[in-house]
Length: 53
Image (cartoon, rainbow, N blue to C red; front, top):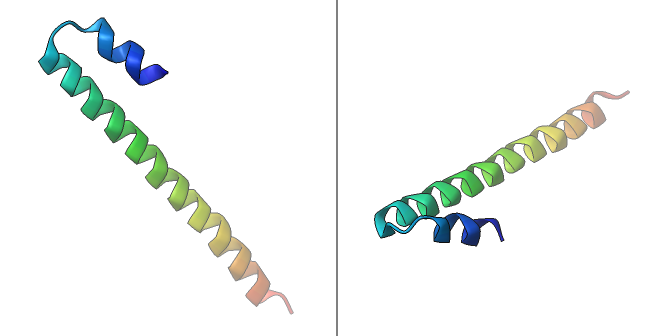
């Protein structure tokens, strides 16, 4: 797993904690990005459906 290898390479606990926070932040951002793009796709599909005659 990616997180484990990053964690145990750093002997300093503080750096390790910072790594965890960075990883969580990155993962959170990826989820947000995914939701936004999903909303765009769904929104686009809805808009097309309603504008079709």
